[in-house]
Structure formats: C-alpha cells, structure tokens
Amino acid sequence: MYESGFGIVIAGLLLAVVNMIIKPILVIFSLPFLIVTLGLFMILINGFTVFLVSKLYTPLHITNFWAAVFAGMVIGLVNYLVATILDLEGKKA
Image 1 (spheres, helix red, strand yellow):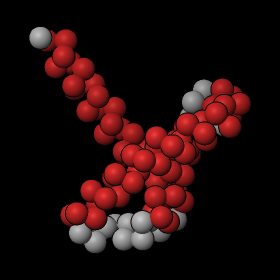
Image 2 (cartoon, helix red, strand yellow; image 1 turned 45 degrees about the vertical axis):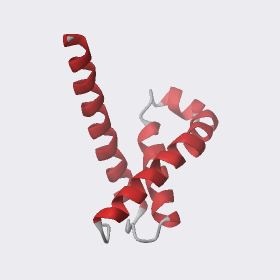
Image 3 (cartoon, rainbow, N blue to C red; image 1 turned 90 degrees about the vertical axis):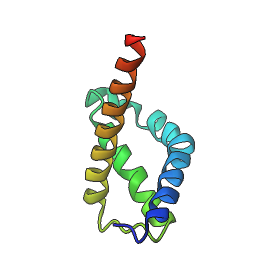
Image 4 (tube, helix red, strand yellow; image 1 turned 90 degrees about the horizontal axis):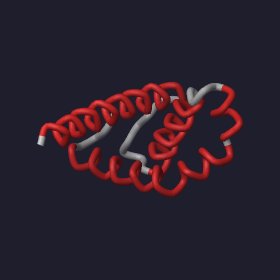
C-alpha cells in the first residue's frame, strides 16, 4: 500500500535501481536453484526485491514476505504483458 501517487513513482524508481544492481547478483548466486526449479525460483527473487524496496522506502507498506512475492508476481505479469504488446506493435510496422 502506498500513501500518495508520487510515492509510488519513487518506489518504482527505487525498484528499478534495485533490479539493476542487486537482482543480477542474486540471480548469479541462486543459479543452481534456478536450474533445479526451471526458473520458478525467480518468483522468490522478485518478491525479495519488492520486499527490500519496501524496507528501504518506508512509505511503501508491504506487510510480509509472501505479500511481496505476490506483488512481484503481479509486477512480472504486467511487465510481460506490456513487453508483449510493445513487441507486437513493433512487428506491425
């Protein structure tokens, strides 16, 4: 949950920074788990990054880790849909 519309923009920017800096390190260290689970461990990594952002940016309130995992799944799904739509638009031209 967020307190203001501008606060969610800041949280999104902070999530982008965490995804650029910390997420690649997490992926490298958890590579064996990713291979064994065929990539499903990435859901927990996404949840961890969302949970980390909620701890770094206090106006973003995530109650527990599993809520952060669910938020990470929603963010990943929206990201996939937007990327697919934009890719389809590029193929039309």
